[in-house]
Structure formats: C-alpha cells, structure tokens
Length: 167
Picture 1: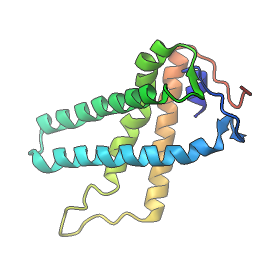
Picture 2 (picture 1 turned 120 degrees about the vertical axis):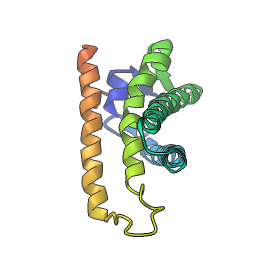
Picture 3 (picture 1 turned 60 degrees about the vertical axis):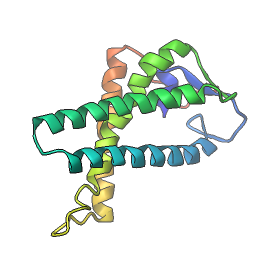
C-alpha cells in the first residue's frame, strides 16, 4: 500500500503498468503471500484454542503468539523481498527493524480476524454460519481498523503521506 512507500521509503523499479504506483502484477502476488500467511497463522491460533484450557494464560499465549507471529511474518517478508532486484528501501536497517514492526500492524489485526471467520468450525452442534455478507462487512471493518492504526503510527512518527507519486 501507499504506507510502504511513504513510511518505509520503499520502491519498485520494474517496468510495469501501475495502479497508485504499484505494479499491477504485485496485487496478484500479494494474494498468494497473504493467503499463505493467514493459513499458517490459523493453524497456530487453532492449536492454542483447541489445546489449552480457557483462561488468562491461554489468552496471554494467544496474544503473544499473534504479536510475535505478526512481527516475524513482516520481518521475513521484508528480508526475503530485499533480494528482488526491482525492490529497494531508502534505509534498509530501518525497513528491517522499524518497518517490520509497522508492517506487522496489518497482521496484528488480520490474523485474529481471519481466524474468527471459522473459529467455531470444530463445534459439532450449532456452529456459527458465516455468510458472504458477514465476511464482507467484517473485512471492511478490519480494513478500517488497520488503516487507522497505520495512520496513528504514521502521524506519531510525523511522516507525510504521499499517494500515487511517480517513481
């Protein structure tokens, strides 16, 4: 998103047709990356919910795993994409440390959100039915939560937001 370009000073230099200065092919790549991340996070969160007795310790473990997995996922993506020849950061160390924490905000919200869509799937009696409308409305709300958190951090860091600037 534009936050990667404004806050992390990241850029793609590959020749491509762009939308908001993002190569259109990257939208498709994002889909399979994020699908993989969220399936793996669901496995971890489901293991916690089904293995441990409800209580403060399980809740603490659940939140800790979300925070750690969010930072780890963001850091590993930042690290692995750095070898892509058409991707660059203005300050690589800042991108790895601070940028990964900033990028992890997406996952802090989206990992538990994605899990909530089917958290009752293991229940044999009266499982919650999630409709397409439920998914759409919830996703809009989660997206707004992410944008607000990103903007709060961006404003705190006093970084201007630039959208659609040519490379």
